[in-house]
Each structure stands twice: as structure tokens, then as C-alpha cells.
Image (tube, rainbow, N blue to C red; front, side, top):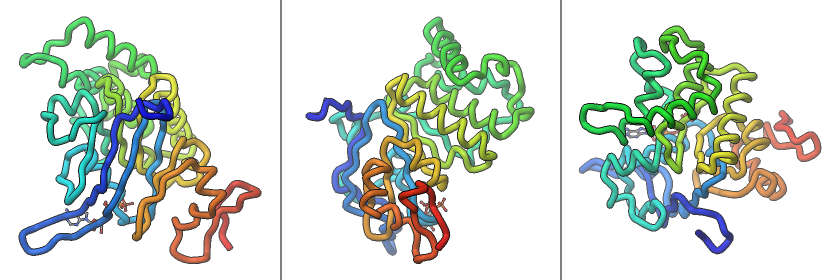
Length: 263
Ligand SMILES: Nc1ncnc2c1ncn2[C@@H]1O[C@H](COP(=O)(O)OP(=O)(O)OP(=O)(O)O)[C@@H](O)[C@H]1O
């Protein structure tokens, strides 16, 4: 527990991220001190190519960091095996579409992989976790459908459900609403907020849905070329830092209508 009573799941100390080869190192962002707490939905925002996916991949150890450190609870991420990590962090990546001939149930059951033995047999606890996850995500009725028959919104819900069945303190999602219509975007955000608050998970998502993010996130991480700014949506709006999302003066956040407007 931190001094404020919040339960820290992940922290970074002076973290630098980017890409390195023998010839050159490309730094995408540096000197980042970040904290993720249980029970909070955090939205990572910033313009195209600023480094959101790079940060998410680094935090989940899918790519090496350049400098600094990442801690889970108080232990460096370097000290966790792949399997140990999979019991703490689950990942939902948009580009990774699951094998289409799986049923929804089979896809969700994959979330139990870190816990099953080498034959992959599901035990009573696994079945319980899968059932609970399906109920939380309202997927029970679709459990026998094949994934390739699902709409984008249903498939996204199944991917979130798989992460839920993995039963991790931290769930990281890269642009989970990218292909969804407005209603399904909103429903996905609401589901993620519910999971964070009611199931006490830390949820970190990258998104371009800044309007929704300002309405629903507990905290925003706003990536700019110079630095990453963190704070509640209301604090970033009040300080006008929210406008750092845009290069030009063509758009800004209107405090009165609580909307982004074109100038
Ligand atoms: N494998 C790689 N090697 C070198 N540079 C890369 C690699 N992958 C991405 N980059 C660069 O890193 C920078 C950040 O990319 P990243 O995909 O993290 O941005 P993003 O904020 O997620 O973008 P978007 O919102 O468009 O998805 C970009 O300049 C990109 O070209």
C-alpha cells in the first residue's frame, strides 16, 4: 500500500523506452515515473506515432526498455518469469486476432493457460474463473459461437473476457475500441471501468477516444514529445494541459461544454 492508501500494482522509475540496434538507439520517451493503482482505469492518450504502443509493450515486457526500471508491486520486472508475469499482467492487443475456429468459450479458456499444468487440463478453479468472467462480460449466451462469427464488438468483449479469466491485477489494452461504432466504444469503456472499480483491477488502455477518455478515465497519461503528463481528466482540463494533445491552435477543449471543439 502507498501512503495515500492506494494499492500500487506497477511503477516505473526514470523509464526510457524506444528501439535500439548496434548502430543507433532511437529514444521514444524518457524519464518517466509512472504509477498504476488497483481499482483505476487509466487512459493513455497522445497523437499518432508518439509512442503509446511502445510504452504498453515495454510495460508488459514484450520489448526491452532502454533505461530505468519497472516494478510490479516492489519487485523489478526482470525478476519475473514469463509465466509469473502472465499471472499479474494480461494483454489485449488489437492486431492479434485469435485463431478463428475457436469458440468463444475456448478463447476465454486460453486465459487460464498460466495456471494449468502441461497437459492444459482445466480444474475446478479454472472453470469457476471462466464462468465468472463470462458472466461479468455478458458473454454466457455466446459461449458456443465460433469467434469468426462474432461482430467486432463481440470479439473485443471476448478478448477482454479472456483477460478477465486470466485473473491478473493489471490488464493492458492497446486501442481496444479501434474498430467499434460509437455505442460499442462506449459499452467497452463502461465494461472496463466496471472491471477496474468493482473487481479492483488496474486497467491501462491506449486510445484516441479522447472525449470518452476525459469522461470515464480515473487518470489520463498524456504523451507529448517532451514528456508524459499524468493526472485526473479534470486536473488536466483545468490546467489546460489537455490541449497539448494537439499540435496547432485548430482544436481545443471547451471547459463549458466539456467537449473538444474546432476553432
Ligand atoms: N520496431 C520498431 N523499430 C523502430 N521504430 C519503431 C518500431 N515500431 C515503432 N517504431 C516507431 O516508434 C514510434 C512510436 O510508435 P508507436 O507505435 O509506439 O506509436 P503510437 O503512439 O502507438 O501510434 P498510433 O497512435 O499511431 O498507434 C514511431 O515513430 C514508430 O515509427
